Length: 80
Image (cartoon, rainbow, N blue to C red; front, side):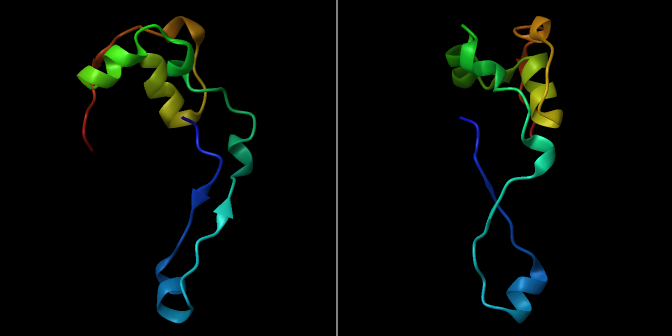
């Protein structure tokens, strides 16, 4: 479920040039950990119930997590 690239576009590209989709991989994400849900036994339950654990929240924010945080502090996903 990890993404290999991000699509980037800016307003100036839209206003002054023909819009194109570019593949871009930030260097600070090259060595990040795999998604904690890939090996978690509760992944399907979290997906069905719209919940997330501490490891997933940390991984989403920084790309890293502590193994002991998997299945810890499971709560409903907050919409931002």
